[in-house]
Length: 215
Image (cartoon, rainbow, N blue to C red; front, side):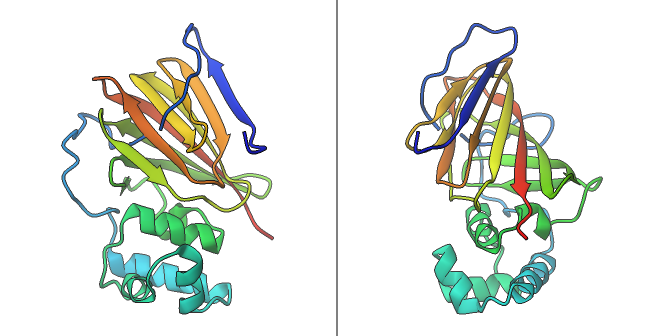
């Protein structure tokens, strides 16, 4: 398991763990077509300003951050200036290298914040901190037949998913987990990881992201 603790809980369910990957949306009906839309329901100029401030606070150059995140320098520049509405995958890669949750780029709830990946949507419900740890709680929906991959987050970040409907595979790419209704799974997500809905049913779940605050 690459030294990564992985947990599986079954709440009133006899389902066991097998292997696989995931995807995610907002409350209500699922838009299973996943037509291209902005990655965030936020002004790209506001997102860019916050990203640039975070980079400056950490003393990292534009070139160095782009190199660490594995993206083109011009793309990062366009994100910071608000010219480009970056994908969720790009923003995850950037914030991982800055050591901050992606929620650092968003307005805090109660305003609904929707984040969209290539094959998922997630609605940020709450952000809270406790004992040098930041938590982000999301409502997620996983359309069937789609796969979402995510880059590694910074060291110590973990993801905790509780499934309400459908069958979900999620976790490290090399050894994912499968959970059905009533099941809870968790893993360290400082490695590449993914999500996938199995079968014809939409997966509805909650996702709790746990980010240790770097000194």
